[in-house]
Amino acid sequence: MRPFLPNTVLTICSGAILACFVLSITGGVQWAVCALPLSGLFMSVIYPTVNSKGISCMPKSEPGAAAGVILFYTCLSAVLAPLAIGAILGHADETEYQPPASNISST
Image 1: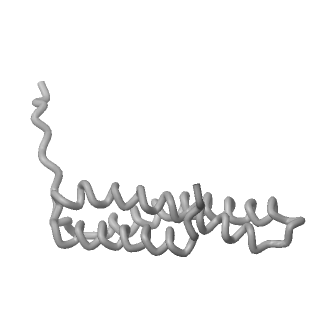
Image 2: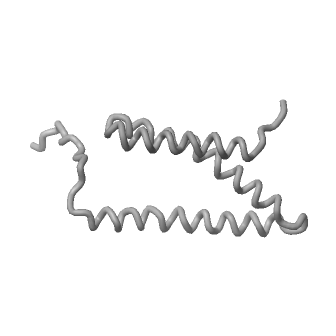
């Protein structure tokens, strides 16, 4: 089996992510519920591809250091991004979509 070229993989997956985002914006909540998680499937291909290309550009004696730096910033963004999103949404006055009320009555 011949491997795919990284640029081709990145282009296809980036286009698929864009299509998912456009579909979620134009299709409303019903489409966004499926399209946004589907975009994560294509994002999961991009991350290791970019890491592999970044590590391969480093000197042959330092692939561990390059992988460590990439991993550090990945972990840092995994912690800070949800906090930033929560802070931004916490200041929003109202949202367009309200989740349905629970049918469970409290007794």
